[in-house]
Structure formats: structure tokens, C-alpha cells
Image (cartoon, rainbow, N blue to C red):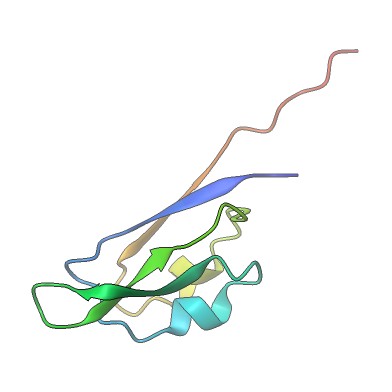
Length: 76
């Protein structure tokens, strides 16, 4: 299975929740903290991310960067 992770720029996230709805692995949620602009921001809550980039594609503020781990090649 391909693994991934996301980095969310919490200082520019406005908490619109589009990324949360777009995540098929349910890996994102709104934080309990508030950013400097006064919004709750999205955060990664579990390690089920596959790096599908759905969250980054729907983010209107481009606050999400997705990283995928390199696929491990099997020895022949």
C-alpha cells in the first residue's frame, strides 16, 4: 500500500472543511486550537494517509502539501 502524509499550513487555513470531506481515509479533522487569523484549522489525525492528494486539490487557500513515500521495489 502506498503511504503518504500531509503538511497543513495552519496559519493560512480557514477551516472550510473541504479537505476533510474529500479525504477517503478520514485522516483529517478540525483542530481544537485557533490559528492567528481566528480559525480552527485542519490537521492530520491518523496514519491512514495514502497520498491521494484529494485534500490539496480542493483546498481554496493552497494550505496543504502532500508527501508520498517512495514505493518499495521487491527483489527479484
